[in-house]
Image (cartoon, rainbow, N blue to C red; front, side, top):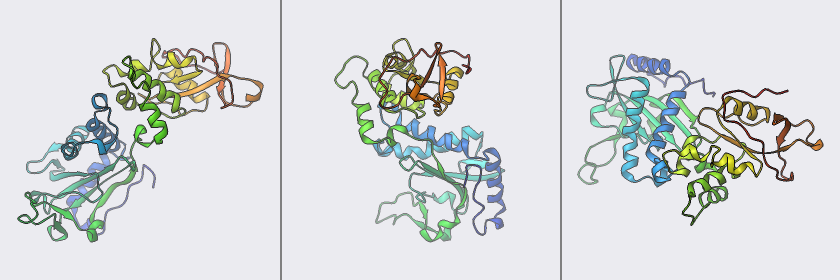
Length: 332
């Protein structure tokens, strides 16, 4: 199933005109699910707050922060799609009250008594799996089970959850779609440790040492601002990437270019056969001046010389300057 496809309604949903109206409204607002995916990525990053905490793993969150995730998802979706607030539930969509429920555990949504027999927008995201889903559910009180005995198990709010045999009641809008990669979470442990331990014990710019090691270790992959923010842990975190003391300057002597989202940088990345960085992204690569054994390899003309992606056995040589300008570089 591609990004532009979405599952059809669950069995029996055609008999629920309100749910069908809500479904059509949400699919009209976000036909591809791209906006939904961005909200979920941003919400998780908001909770991790890497700039101030250095965290990148959901498991590092406190219990109260995880509990707060549902409220943030609800609010951020409301703002993203300019939804109206409901009188009794979270949203008013096409004149219909809709409750929003988020869980990091699939089918783990807790339905409050006031949402019974109402429509729920159920959302799931798992940063470790790198997946997310969102669907609609009529919270049928007959087909839900209480989450615990109020008097014996301390379930004070008497919430309900979907029973396993009724998981098919969810009408998915988008199911198991890719969540934008959390790079620090998904790179191998050895590489991650090398990055996090860079500059250990140094009182001077430990964040800069980590950024340098990031671009040294993770080449040929798009790296977004969140990663930079988490490692730099400072307000002007992008300063650690730029020339004038940043990674572009410090790694240039090692032959490493860092292509950002400037048009000329994007052109260089494309001509070298690298992923082209999008807004807020950077891609690093070690380059060398083209030699006869590089014949036929993608190259780019910089400072009057042709440069190619270095092979592992190519000797290290200083990289050319890659100006931070809006002017695109054209190939000869």
